Length: 309
Image 1 (tube, rainbow, N blue to C red):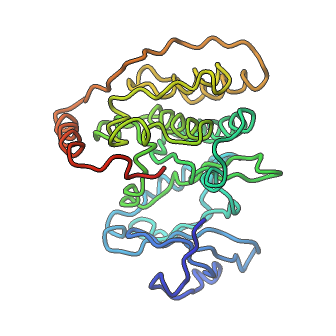
Image 2: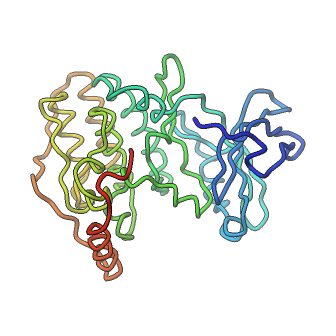
């Protein structure tokens, strides 16, 4: 995790509500500043996210969203501890999940073994399934949102389900579902696609969207990911391909992803659907068609591979 010194954040370390002592600024975004804090009441560390501009304050986090998450805690899902409630939430206190994310691990390794990738997939699918049961969609699944905790990083906790609205601009194009790229409606299978893109990188060491097209956004819309068959367990390769279907209706649900991953981990036979070698996402609105046209125009001028996953 990249750390930012307090003097760079424009905010002085302080104590919130007499309890949360801000000790280290971890990140400073247009919408929020993220701090590591000490809990002066119960001890230990916490993560504090503070809305720090007018845009974030006028479109605050939905407090009902926070209440739903806190009322239904899950071991694989980040759960809010506290927030300041006015017209919305202008700061949120989250548990400190540890010092390493999947993004940190992948930054130091060119792909992970199948067994490790399956372990991460099972934990992430459990956390996201719990989120979906609450009728919430994450919409920002990425390696940096998956925290590896417990003995040897054996427990995966999904973070980032709660964020200030303009924080959605931090989404990395390597992990966007095609419906997100074009602004169509999101659903739980949007998270399935994003997790599939994360799993692809976890197994191969590279993002297919960055490697396969001149723009990663266009890759999600029109380019099939290169098959992982022959490079990993064939069942795992086919599960990734299923998760990365362009058509949202053709993707598995998150519980199906978890069930298949468990079957593979336990070496139980599993039947996976065939995936077409060529598929293009169909825009669902005139606005999406306009965005697609703009992407094609942009692709004519962009320098290839300007993104790093």
